[in-house]
Amino acid sequence: MPDGATVVASVRVDAGGPQLLLANHLEGTVPILIYRVTNLVDTVAEMRDRGWVPDTEQFEIPHGPCITFRDPNGQRFALYELVRPEANRFFAGRVDA
Image (cartoon, rainbow, N blue to C red; front, side):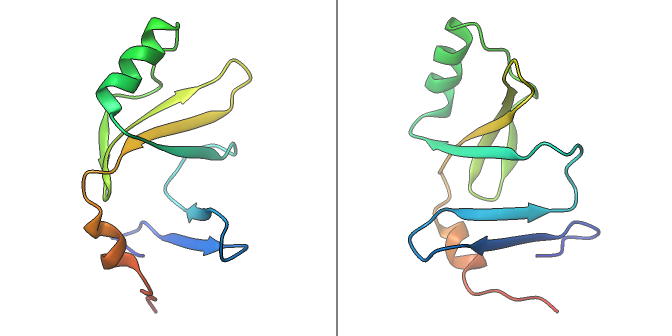
């Protein structure tokens, strides 16, 4: 979905599999694994207690608040809380020219 110069596409390899998001606005060559959590504040606090330091400040994605981390090997991952489930309906079946 274009948003100015940003383009994001969602694909599924299998009907029951996870969505793969392809985005042109992210830096680097390492993919970001994205996980939904029940409560972002609690999960981030637990991560911090275990020694994890966020890679970014908390930010918003269409579905809710999000924060990213990087593991010791450089793998990036994000955690988000689904607070706007209606976002899926907005994007479902959308194809932009």
